Image (cartoon, rainbow, N blue to C red; front, side, top):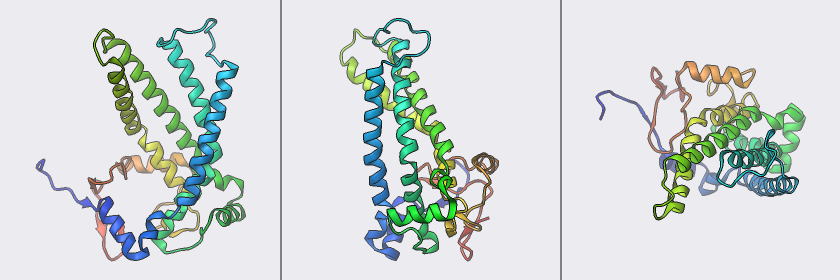
Length: 258
């Protein structure tokens, strides 16, 4: 369409069809149990921590008086509280996130190493210790925090300087701007999500986390550097329009990129 050839990878429906062909429809729900645990526990922790922050009236240093609602200081204060609550929830639920990813990645090598929540907890602790539960936590935390601040700051400046309060449907427009800035922030911080997910399955004993399917990284900075050099920081950011990275080919016999 744009004058150059691009190798397209299969999209969501093609992969879903392939999974159903191999594992049946139940294969589409691998990792659901730990994902539900993470969602439930994360929601509870987030609400409790946020409520505690509101009760303690946590404010940014230098704000001696209550900030006016809608002001920059108010946005900073509320974002700080949200950041604390979200970070606590992420840290506590990250072990379930790791288990979820590994349950799904097992499909590549046809393993059954992670078969349930409790069995997976025992397996990770026995093979990797406590640190195994927090593989990929740092880039995930950084991505969450950056996404939150970018979203809220952009939305505040748009609502304060680009939207006229005298116009009708101001509330709907502000809600729309919040959604748009949230989408934009998630795009900017996607590389952190990618690196976090790769590190969660990196060298964990599954085929999907080992060569030739994936490189082995000593830490997340090496992973970031490797993806950046290959121009592959946007890998997996689209469900449908997925293209092969520039300079890469796919070996059908070896079922891998080279």
